[in-house]
Image (cartoon, rainbow, N blue to C red; front, side, top):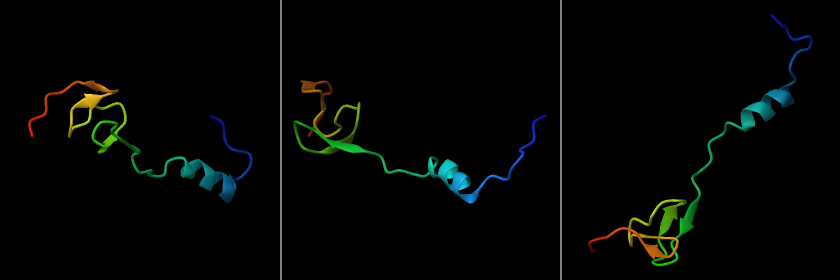
Length: 59
């Protein structure tokens, strides 16, 4: 089993743990209705995806 020869510096620890921090989900605006939706998902308010009507939404 390998053992570390040197102690890991505080900067290296922080850089490694920095990649695991929480980031807010990126929301995009719908081209049809302007609502904020997650990417790669049909808009729940109007039912369109990439300019096409995908879902039937009752108003």
